[in-house]
Length: 245
Length: 223
Image (tube, rainbow over all chains, first blue to last red; front, top):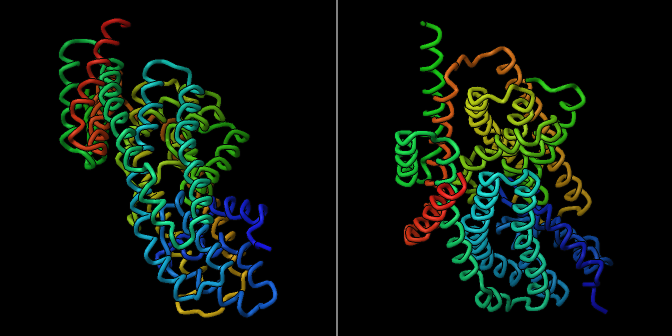
């Protein structure tokens, strides 16, 4: 009888939410990965405590992945542990998988999906929608993909084991990321103009806002320091003017 | 302003929630500034003002990417503190500008504390090369690390709310010209949104322009 019962699968999925709980500079999410796998390992090695300890040690080694796609690795490793795969095979498999799980997740979620959803929330607020509508829209849109990724990853990992790479190649992540980036670019333009409209009153103020938008486009990821410097400068200059007048 | 004790306690607890949501547990994005600040504003009695703080901090945070082991500013607890303190003010542009200045600094402090946490977690994790680890011990240490992260978030949110509240209460913002603050805020918001476009690639410039055109149309029609 399979040790990967419905209860064990549910435990794998639920524990995957805590995979980064002990993120550290030495093993990255290695300890967390072992934590996720414990329900499986405890069943596979239930009659051999020393073998269980050795399995826990093996899985607590260096590992990294995007947190939402870690279920792909957890599912596949659970399947391999159940099938009695040799430790060296497991080690090589995890090592081969970790780069792609990180890259796919970073590009799809951090770089496209999350900013697009966040800018959607900003647009809704700038359009004057109630706060709860904007926040709900963000959380629902963002977590739809988040939860689907975790569930899909576990299903695919448990089903395919060592052959999980094929499912990763065939998954529509690239297309999904492209569409999210398209939406994000459009929403960024819309939000930028709505931001100007919310602050500017006179033509000169609109011109200043357009210049700020262009400066942001040019600065790109360096914009945070410029934003902080502008806010501090306005605060300081105005405070000095008031204090000396 | 410094919130009432009951609200302050709730904000502190919520700071712990958003800190663990950021990395350790869940990552449902309750920790994003737009969510964290809005809900903190709601706790402090003014969700609309919380959403306003969250809108700005979210725009500033768009270009922060948590890739690999890089140190990056932490948005959640700072957003809770900023919105918690701003909710009780007279809601002027000047107060908003000052609270944002401090929130951006507090995000940096949060980033440093995350780095400290990750170094602490090295000591909690089994050293590499161990060939035998008790499962219960690993489980307890893992959950303990989540607890430390929760405490870190509570400390950040609590200290931040008190600091920002004190700054606003003592009137360390003398800006009389709300118009200057308004313009500066509009400018940095537009700049941040323009910068966020770079995440999606320069090839999508036409889509950015299309979005801007729809924005202009909306302003002309509805203003």
